[in-house]
Image (cartoon, rainbow, N blue to C red; front, top):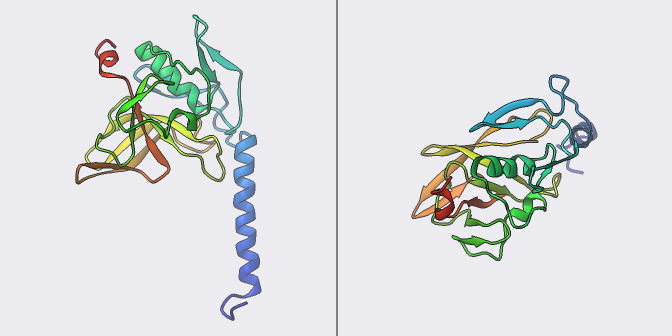
Length: 207
């Protein structure tokens, strides 16, 4: 052990890591925020409510449209995104199930149709910038193997805002991501952002 790292330092750092891991474990399983209750409306975007979910892994049944279309598990991130597209654009995805990470198909070329979602798919780092109403798809990470999806709610010159459901007990429904447009390419957030999906031009003109 190097002389400048004492045993006390190792113990303190180990304790901090353990506390962080326990915090993430608890956030995944329990509603540790007494200020809100699962199912509470905490935001809305274009008339579509955003609900508080509590623990990240909490599920309060399944949302199903009157016509039988599967919207998703309440109140997960996918449920909000699909409910927004269904209510705002009357859009039904051919593949009605799947985790957030499944919304982005790596085999689909940049700007081509993702047939499972019936949406045009754009890659992060590609030529087309995100627009309001697009679905942003995040890759899985160490503490979230399912990925994440959100809706673009505002686009500025150097950043955009997303609106999301189920960001965690103390997460916020709105989040800003850095946006860089350079040399004909668009880079959004970090490498965890896989890309974004939007309605085909013919569909968006009708909504």
